[in-house]
Length: 640
Image 1: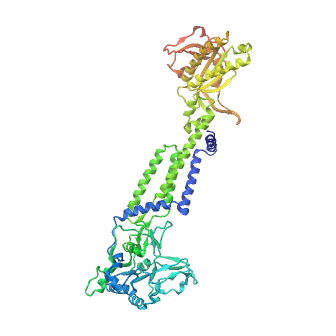
Image 2: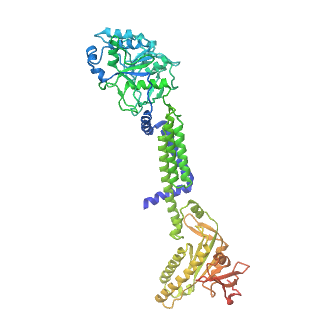
Image 3: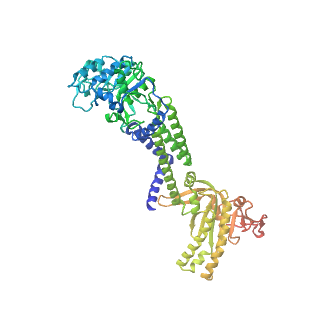
């Protein structure tokens, strides 16, 4: 328990210094800084957004059908093992003249564009006629072939020497000495290098979610093959070079390469599809050719399908637009503020948790609906920060409550019944208890009669033991009735009701406590008489109700929780009036506050020291009586 006590004490001191709201504000500021740093720089939570976004895109792809005018001529496994293809072209890789013949057949039907997704390097040294045939077919300006960017290659060439047909162009601030590694389609003459790079565009986790129209390096523009076709066909495109792909669940129109080629070589045979007006991607999906990349929809997506998806997105103007970059940080900050305000206002933890759950359902539902208008937004990372804020503020709230409870117990356990201490859990109550202020209270003074003469005939240790037993008994009664022990004054006891916890019935509690103290004295006196024959114990109890200043009084080394003011003074004077009159006397104000809870004997008016007007005093009876008795002998009053 020592360690928790130290930590809670430290937190209690910090709360005293900064204030509860300041602590929540400080924690909220730290969470906000953490959020902004992660969402704008560290990107540690991107993995959450990506995984959730991938799942959402897989689900969304199921409703999407690719356009029929984007066709994949597929070098699939059946084409590689087709007997006729084996007879004509042999095993892979096929002579480039085969591709030339297919391209010639396709361009005759006026397609919009053709992407030959086959690497055309190195040159065919054994059969240069194959490269020549392909070059002849490549004179059609609608055909594009790929190049590969070699970012870390030692083989670099000056970009200024790139053939104009490659689409590499200098920007306004281009470095004229810029060099870059490019694996160009050297099987073709440079004047036919209508090309663009086809490098796989992947995120930090290796998944390909986007594609590029091109990229800038050293002030030079290097086009992607998708960008080249977009320029040729004047397709709509995003403002940024890189854009997120919007995937299709249904397959593209796929024509086996062997079927298309053999039909083109058969006189009188029709092609298996009409190339007119189509965008055609010729590429490999055969497993042995290893042209597969990981994407949100499949860990082994064929490369030609990625190109086809990008072209279909551009043609249909339905690529995914990204939500503004400020949306997720703003949502995270709103959640952090909402959590902080909720806990600072001491709301039940159920409400912030329910609010976070509602926001999660709303935002995720919006993310689903936004895909229908081609807008991609994944709010998982700000929701995760909201959950972190819920946990952090919840822990802080719990620790503050614990620290507050320890603080209260440390302050009031000497003065108040532990049950009262435990009830001081609300910050408002603690603040009221700690601040000195005028409160309506009932003050009780109790004194032992004849204690001085008793002390003269007994040993000091006997007297101390006797007093300790007496105090233990009487304080227990005070605590049982919700009273606060103020102090011991020699053999006297001072207590009050109505603070630190407000008590509407403070006068009744004080009177019940006095009656209980009287009964306890009877039992205690009988015990003492048996132990110390000849010992007689009597007490006087005075009670008064009224305003008094309640609070901590003293120095930083020693503080007492006490009541001061005229109400306290009068309570002490009333106790002095009990001699020879009654064991318990209460003031007129206490009598009035008790109502019909007790029967009273009116002992008349008394003159007390420090007051010009006499004070009317009453003796409470152990049992309720509707009619009040008057003590004839006391009507003329006395003095104290």
